[in-house]
Amino acid sequence: MQSSESKLGQGATIVIATYNKGKIAEFKSLLSKFKLKILTSSDLKIADVSETGRTFEENAILKVKSIPSNYISLSDDSGLCVKCLDNKPGILSARFAKNCGGWIHAMKKIYNEILEVGGENFSARFLCSLALRFPNDKIFLYNGEISGSLTWPPRGNNGFGYDPFFIPDGYNITFGEMEHKKKILIDHRSIALKELIKLHLSDK
Image 1 (cartoon, one colour):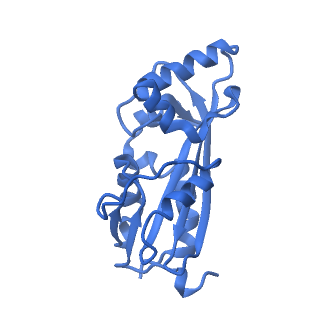
Image 2 (image 1 turned 45 degrees about the vertical axis):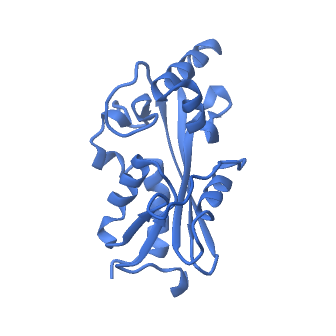
């Protein structure tokens, strides 16, 4: 059981360490019933963080530490790992897309790289690491992942990032085709957040 110093009750303020509007929208939706006051790095005019870590967890910690220690803060690092490409782009997912000129160009490049190595294994996973930091500098880490397969061409205009490229196991539509409020209840970020909520949040 976590101590009262690592619990958030209704009305508590938490800072999400990101500028990513898609992630902010997901966090706000998933945390809505707890009636938290949610701020972001932008609200505090804190510069975006260079993701120099070697793992999702290391990057999540770098981000959460960018927020002044007098705040409770939450960060996320997540990405797409393609099995036949040695789990690339992985922690470089966002930078890979930027270097390709955007998400659609990144998806096309990944698809072509899969074809180059044989073209039969389109298995992939979305991974997420969440870091939650309290003013006592205690940091808690939670991980989530969801397996599925990639499809070409991308389908759907919902979600963000690689969502239109990814079909989760057990479904025949992409994240991009799913109704947003349903998608965020099953994705990698939600899986990690459910554990965090169970241990740190109270609706009282």
